Length: 236
Image (tube, rainbow, N blue to C red; front, side):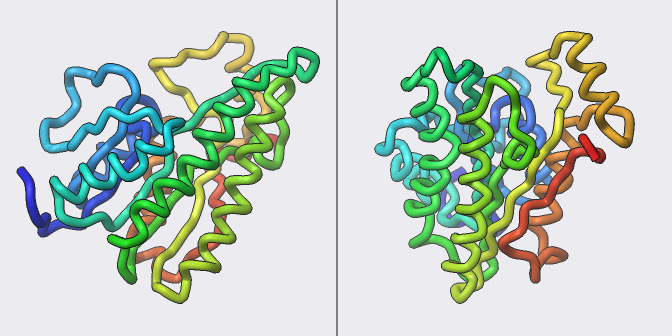
């Protein structure tokens, strides 16, 4: 299919696996969906989801991705900045390349993609950023990851203020610990997260996807500049 879509169109970055995949599948019942992916796609991805290979650390990818979405669907209504990178190195190691990659993916890519999408967004369009509770609860050994997500939260509020007069809403979802089958955690670490969570379990990718779906919907039509924490009461 190519040309003008009669449905609203959502672009989900990093949509091949984990939280991004759950978001893409959740939105696909009401939206035409495009995703970006870095590695090979799972075989069971629905055929009607447009999959665009992209290395989002490369600024040239921003216009390439948006051009592909517009060429295929003719519009974009929802941008979900889900693709992320997590650096895990103590300060003594000073891994500058990892730090730069973390900020490139977690902050600069959302900004670049929004800039590329802006000519196509209209009143009622929505931008949703996937942040983290680590923006306010710094993780040991991953300081730059937490800092990049804190910067993303500030950027979310700044873009909400800038784009509000155009009728474009910008929000973020901040997950706590999420159980992602493709990336299982150590059993002891998993139990530690559960013990620190009021609801006594890890989040599922669908828990995060449901929050994204709500913020994308007209039911959230007067919500902008907010960071919705979806953590089950992590570290209350």
